[in-house]
Length: 314
Ligand code: 6CS
Ligand code: FE
Image 1: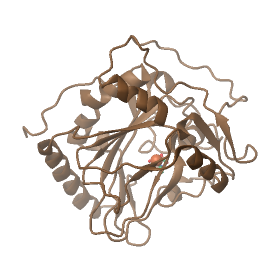
Image 2: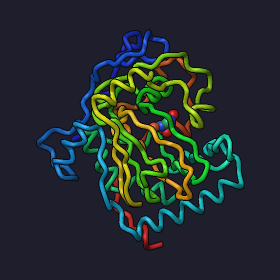
Image 3: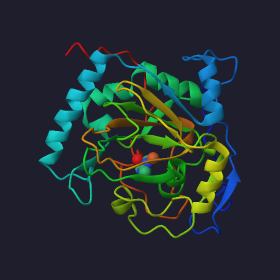
Image 4: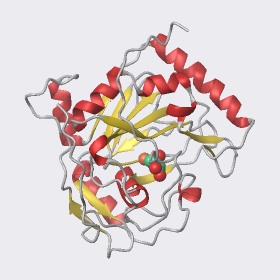
C-alpha cells in the first residue's frame, strides 16, 4: 500500500522558489492533492474527497462527540493554566496582552493530545489523502483567547515549511479540531477555495530566526496584495465556522488566515500537521538554519501507527 520513495532533489532547481527568487507571482502546483488512487477505499464519503481535491479543504461536522470534546476542552484549559506559570519555547504569547497565543508540540508533551494525533479517524484519513505512512511534522493549539487576540495573516503553510523547514513537496495535510465553537465573530479560519493549486511566490529575504517574530505576527512568507486579490477573485473566501468537535482538513498549500478576536468567546483549535514519510524534511530551501524541533519534527521521524482510543474512560 505504501511505497517508500525518498525524493532525491537537485537543490539548484527548487521547483517552489520563494523569498529572494524574483517578483511575487503564481506558479502552477506540481504535486497531486489527493495521492490515493480512485480504487483505494476512502475513510470518508468520496464526494467529500472530491470536494477536498477541488477546494483544498473540508469541514467535517460533529466529527468528535460532545463527550470527547469535553475531555479535550478540560485538557486544553489545564494546559493553558500550566503554561501561564512557565516560559518554555513551545509557548507563544500574544505581543500586547501576554495571553497564550499558541502551544506547540502538544503531540509529544501531552498524553491525551499525543493519542489524539494517532487517532485512526484523523491519522487514517491523512494516510489515505497522502497515500503513505505519515508522521507529525508539527502540532499546536492556537488558543485565540477572547478580547485581545491578534490575527494570523494570510499565508500558505507549505511556503513556510518549504523555505524554513525543507519540506520538499506538497504532500502534507493539516487536521484541525475545533475545541470551542468557531463563530463568524471570533476569528474563524478563513480559506481561499482553489488557492492550493497555485504556489504563491513571496518576496523579501527571511530574517534569521524568523520564527521568533512570525509566530506572533507574520511579515515574510505572506502573499502580495495583488496575488491575494487574484486568488480571492478566483475562489472567494470561506469562513470555517462551526461547533466544537468539527474537524477542518486543509491541504498544506491552501491560502488561509484568521482575523483577530475581540469577543468574549475564545476560538481554540488544535492542529496536527501530517507529512508523508516519503516527504520528510531536508535542509531548508531558503538556505536558513533549521528551525527548532518544537516547530518542525526532524530528529526522530517515525511513522504513526493509527489506533482507536476511548478518551472518555479516564
Ligand atoms: O510557521 C509555522 O509553521 C506556523 N505558522 C503559521 C502561520 N501557520 C502554520 C504554522 O503554525
Ligand atoms: Fe497556517
